[in-house]
Amino acid sequence: MTDTILVTGGAGYIGTHTCVELLIAGYQVVVVDNLCSGSARALERVERIAGKPVTLVTGDVRDQALLNQLFSDYQFSAVVHFAGLKAVGESCEMPLTYYENNVSGTIALCQTMAAHGVKQLVFSSSATVYGKPALLPATEDMPLSATNPYGRTKLIIEEILRDLHRSDPAWSIALLRYFNPTGAHPSGLIGEDPNGVPNNLMPYIAQVAAGTLPQLRVFGDDYDTADGTGVRDYIHVVDLARGHVQAIRQLSAEPGRCDAWNLGVGKGYSVLEVVAAFARISGQNVPYVVAERRPGDIAACYADPGKAELELNWRATQTLDDMVRDVWRWQTANPSGYGQ
Image (cartoon, rainbow, N blue to C red; front, side, top):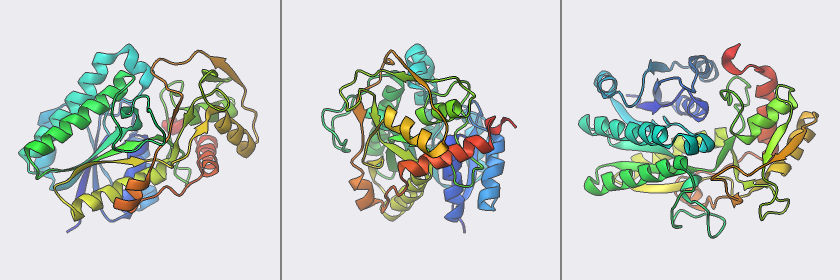
């Protein structure tokens, strides 16, 4: 019998790409998503790419009646948990909304999983749990902290999941710490479709290059980096998605484990390096203006991905140029995102 995976937030950017990889790997996929930032149309495109169906249930993971019905209707072997709010700046303005949504949603999900005997979970964590890293590259055993409420929700959820595992070692939990996902599926059918002005660098640059936005705002040019702009580890979303498939395989092969793995490339690029790569590959001008630093941002963060390579048999294969090409293909083919 084919294993069925529940993907919360599966209609979002990382969720849709992970659904593709799960379907290709032979899993059946059920998505629950409240569509606050995801798109049902994106899942239709996932089906086109994979040539297999996805079941979408529209709803919120905080709705335990809905979750109980879902777990009664399907025999899930594992859950991949993406559902959550994710904008650093917005989290500083609306911390209670972030705590209520992200933390309460995870608790409701885990309570339902426990009630139905489903104890295999892959959690969408973040490199923000390293706070302002004392050393780089960041390794999984470094001290954890957070510089903004969004990151703090991820940190709190990691602690909750570790406590859950300590209380019941039958749980198998992967805490996947993403660095900076970008790129789009090479088909050009799915990609990042932000609401309003993008929070993330690459779609922001893409909209400037396309003429949708007049100029890029570079938040700070006085960081302690080579060119003064923030340095991040950008990882192609397809590489990231494949990491989730490998995590599920690892939890099945070695049940009863709760551990963290970095999903990153292991190299950082500055904002201006990404701008230069985008201008070169797209052939478009990318005008920018320097703005004040955003609260909660740090100078640099990049991963040591060695543990994931060793234990999950996973390694990022896509280059920055690959990421830029795929973002530009998605942008030019879908200038209005999924809205057209």
